[in-house]
Image 1 (cartoon, helix red, strand yellow):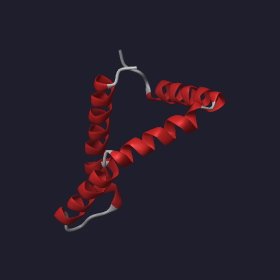
Image 2 (cartoon, rainbow, N blue to C red):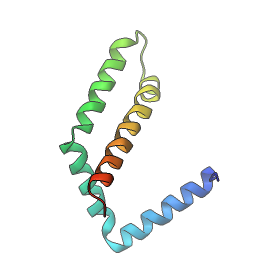
Image 3 (cartoon, rainbow, N blue to C red):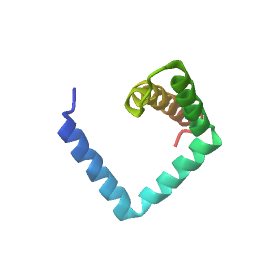
Image 4 (cartoon, helix red, strand yellow):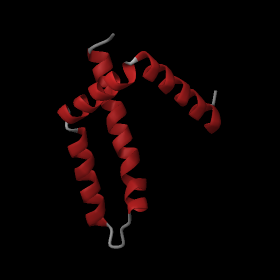
Length: 89
């Protein structure tokens, strides 16, 4: 089953609204940021970005993002699933 882009954005907005109204959005955001810092995710993404910039002669923000973002998201989701498997709710 696929979700259209509009439906996904609408669902995301609705979830975010509920989290903000309940007061959990800031808590979750802060905990996520703390965890990403602690696990070195930001440093890894920064290093990936530097490597990408060094590889390309004619580099710009868009081309670097196109290459780094999928890897950064993959690292995030891998780390997230490891944490969930180790510390189930």
